[in-house]
Image (tube, rainbow, N blue to C red; front, side, top):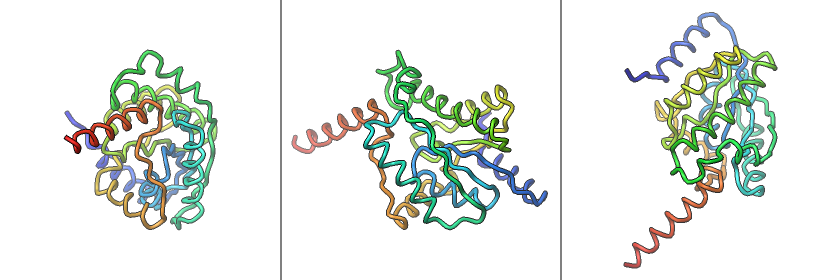
Length: 216
């Protein structure tokens, strides 16, 4: 049976609204464009700390560009409840260790799942340590990301660390399209590959194939 994670989120948000409470959310963010809609949406219900932990991003200059855009968005975006920023470590070896043996798996497969878990695990650990009510990630906003797998990982980490995972499928209700609109409003840098060296190479090959086909 397929679960509707957006409906589950809406039910939880309605319960919190009735309780007249404002829980604290530790939100792992993969990038500013993906977080834009999520922040607009969830800041109505939560006090949010955006956690930027993405050791998968390659090269370092790309990482620095993306983290700067994340900070700028938080500074410029008006939200209902406060949004704070917390930087994670940038240690690319953590990513390479997590995906060892999966380097040749195509984008969207087991290598990506290991990367999801690496980043979400760090978020869960720090959310528990920081006394937050929930943790989640912006990753499910992308049409290219597996929302079912993301939520399965979140629920596994909830059991391991004793910190509530907020269900999500942020691409629903036109969330992804809204993120594109907000990226335009704030002039955000939108990268053309997910982040890691493997996705960068896959994107390069894809572009080359398009050019080759156009010349034929």
